[in-house]
Amino acid sequence: MHQTFDIAHSFAGPVSPIVRLQATLTDAFERSGHSLHSGRHATVRVCPAPAGHGIVFRRHLNTGEAVDVPALWQFRESQPLSSAIRRDGVLVRTIEHLMASLHALRIDNVLVEIDADELPIFDGSATPWCAAIRDVGRTEQPAPCRVLRMRRTVTVEDGRRLIQIGSGPGLHVTGHVSLAHFGSLDWSGAITPERFVQEIAPARSFGRYVRAMAGRAYGYAVGEDFLQGVSARSAALLWRGRVIGGMRVPEEPVRHRILDLIGDLMLAGHPVEGHVSAFHTGHELNHALVRALMRERTAWELV
Image 1 (cartoon, rainbow, N blue to C red):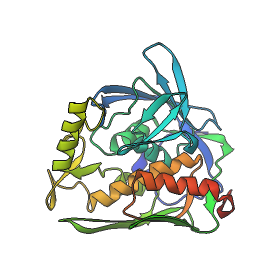
Image 2: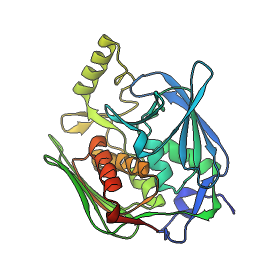
Image 3: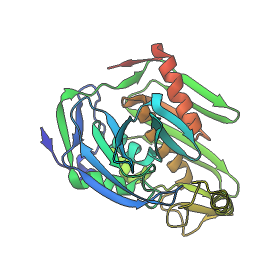
């Protein structure tokens, strides 16, 4: 079944995961830009893939070889301020914004080809990825999409940081962060494609201006790929009680934490259905939740 769409209209309202078919892109798209940590230029080509393929990154190396790295929790590697996967020594990182866009817009099967180890950061948001998916369209495939549905609550804690997921229809996320000079920032809602595009995708990666510039200087001084591409064009930089240039959406920092969480959950290998509560979460805690889910197989079912 061939289906093209305009995101803002065709995805209005929840869709039952029980009756949903798997989907891929109608056509391939290509995007290029500079990366957040390395600062280097990268070109990404996102291609349709057959049912059951999942999301796989194909890294093209300078040697002419290509290595496939599935976007699955088993291949996840801890990296500063990003989500990364590695297989056979080959790294692909800063995948979370594309993963979140695919998750929220119900794209199950793609091959992502990249000529570098890090995806472009663009403006720090997921909006460019959503726009690219909108431009090429979505095609349903003749295979059911199996969803990871919660049967009981699973919780992961680390000091004041906590994330838990319990049963509930669709994917619903409640997020909270408290920042000096900003106070408590909260957002809660069902993650439908339309809502993701309008309320979550525009939220940019964020950080304190002084810390970001110090991190960039440190990376440059020691020759490490750390925040070499950070600037007010690639992130929401916080200065005392404001965002330089202003917030794009209300409570932008907590919405971006939710954006990252949606992308990180996709490493479970299936769309996740349940109610997530996340307090001061980040990539490490998000991935700890995914690992906990994989250990506690009786806490969920595939439907």
